[in-house]
Length: 132
Image (cartoon, rainbow, N blue to C red; front, side, top):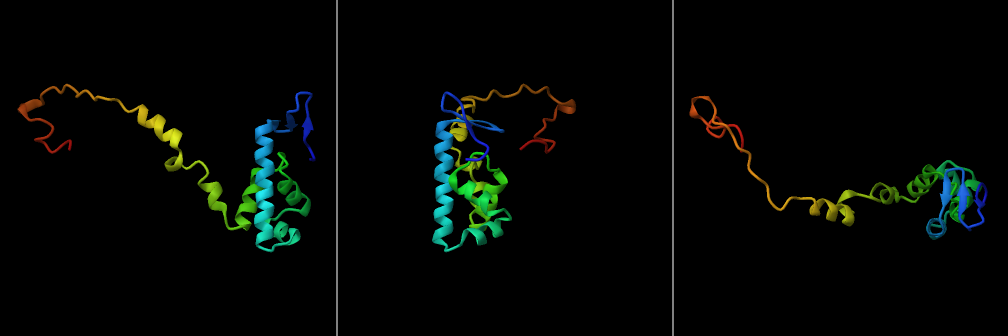
């Protein structure tokens, strides 16, 4: 892969930083899945690259799982496949089970009421139409 170096520990490095093995495997699978989706739609690499606005070489790097490919290149491929929704909804809060669990666990078990000083004239906020 162009622009990717391996360190003595086997961790790949790009100009953007370290590429850990689990990430590298995920990127290779993602590239393979993009290639499969393109071929299932019977789109040539030249036509697909043109739809994405990139060179064939860049498309080939993306499909090979090159960690140096930009997020814009991935987004362009998803758009050309009609699946940009996958990127848009990738970490959607409504589908983030961990985030929802953390928020739910941070909800207090009890809420103490506020002590309110009586307002002038003896009327409460509720009598004035303020509040619920």
